[in-house]
Image 1 (tube, one colour):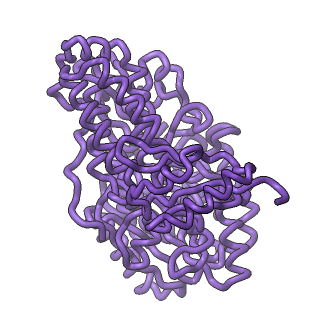
Image 2 (image 1 turned 180 degrees about the horizontal axis):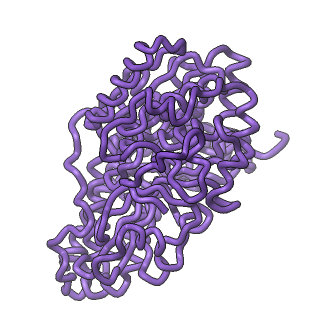
Length: 75
Length: 436
């Protein structure tokens, strides 16, 4: 993979706190006291973490989690 | 420095606003005398120039920034929308006059008293960014503003002015209804609730078209900048904050109300123009409910410059010695918790929790653990909503806990301020029902 790795991003409107993501990749996703994910905004370069992050994205029942490369205009 | 009831000099035609020191947006007939009629407005300012590409450079050179609270450089928004309109077809212009901030009154005042300034500004902006749909977005609660707008639009039709049709879209009076993605959802016929971005409204807004959402005061400035130019605009204010600005003063001040002042003016001067403080101030809330609490010393030293303090939408709420900063912040944060659009977990649960803990603290019923929890929850909430509603509420309570740290200590020891029962600042309104 070339260039900087992607970042996890949660759509807080879609998310209803199913918590699967935090079980799959606790290294990148913690939970607040109400069960909603606190997602690391760090770029993911480690291939193992990236695989787990991709799994968390695909298993989110609300399709609220994304892996995104930040574009300049996303500010 | 100009109070709202200033009379325009009768001999000042045709460029009265060019006079140094006088009001600009509030120039013209007495502000307490109803809306300025089309004939009077035309006699005072003449016909409006037609907007276009030429305005993009003028706006850039003017240094105008958005007055809804974010102070985003206006020309950057304009260029983004204008470019997308050229690529993808006509854009949409929305004048945001919803003014959900309970301590602000400037946008409603401008729409009510100077509707033709708003309409001219809207049309010039629309022509400059390639918009063929022009919307003025107003709170349903602002009945006088709606009436003034309808009357002004009828005057223009009666005068057979050939110009694009302008439609008025109403929203329920809610705090978040003025957030730009919420504006777009409401104009599209949905609820006035924020959406997750990107895409930003400038990319995909009303009916999927590039959309410029611009605060009403900003639009009013544009109507004058188009006439008199960027150098004229910069004659007032400072290099960092050019132009005049509208501020709303409330609380512990002799003459609360809306004022037009030079940006960069010290808060002490602004307060002096409103008759001064009624009692020794213990704190100032600058920028509205999302704003920042300042103690008397920092407040006295602050100037109306977004690089200096959180000017936001120009709100200055003054707390006198009969007030309690912790109690005011608790009231405000609890109101903002009720005004959450209810979409994002961290906002719904987090704001409710900090609001309840702040209320206990204000009443002297909280212990040190509660204060620690307020800080922890605040740290967790920030940045985790679809919009900045939770961030704004946290900014209010964090700066309150810092500014009124000595009071917090007394409250934790079970000795709340005596002023707890009073409402030195106007109390938050009751939340409206519904979102449309």
